[in-house]
Image (cartoon, rainbow, N blue to C red; front, side, top):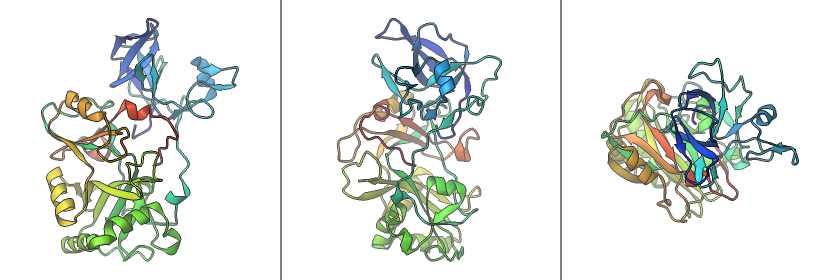
Length: 367
């Protein structure tokens, strides 16, 4: 979930578990949670505890998820207190349900239940020296289509692109900024967390091995691409932000068959934050591929939207080499449109594959 919360939601429906007589499937907000039979009824109010929630010991004990013999919870992580997707008798279960009374639907109980979001430690190569550029960065997030199942309209023209398991990366250029610690005084390079809080990486020797700086050098300085971006911004007299995914070897646990790093664009924002706009998909193609010679995240589908089509493209293997599981898809209307319920007031949603959530090994999820 992009905005972390433990919302009070209504149970939409109960489904029979196909492989276990003592279990059933409870559907809330498009998420399916496997529970003991009879624990909930359609219409009940429950707190939905999402994936990547860290649950306090007292609540774990109350929910009978405590292993007394091992002295830890029965969930994921070293302390058994982290919620992750699991497969229970053949059915994927996403999240936990906690019964509530006297609460309002939509209320966020994260603080009341002392539940926080899991945040992995950031690796050294993703860290670096930063400078304050507040007011000159974007805040960016997308939510799950499972959380907002009624936002997309059946039949509206959309694009599904492959969601890549890398790290969110922004390359911005702000004509006339003249900041002494940035490249040319106007080039803003940052990660998602830094962009949200108004910081950028300094252009200095200390950051020479920083992942985001190296991604910028490889993607933008080769072939004079950045010169073309800057020239277009200077002519228009407005900033531009190129948003994409840096991925490959030693970025996350999925390397997509890349020996080094790669960068793919998924959005371009033109203008000052909160005053500009994201490019429509066809504008994005023309600007990114046509003018700048950059690659976009792989397109899997363009056509009328339906949940059936989304489910068909969500799973499977990546379109890149490596043969590993696909993370999922990102769904974008071909024509940008507003929605005040979504981050950035725009319609753009993700749909993550259960097979990706259940992958094994040295799983990483660095932001």
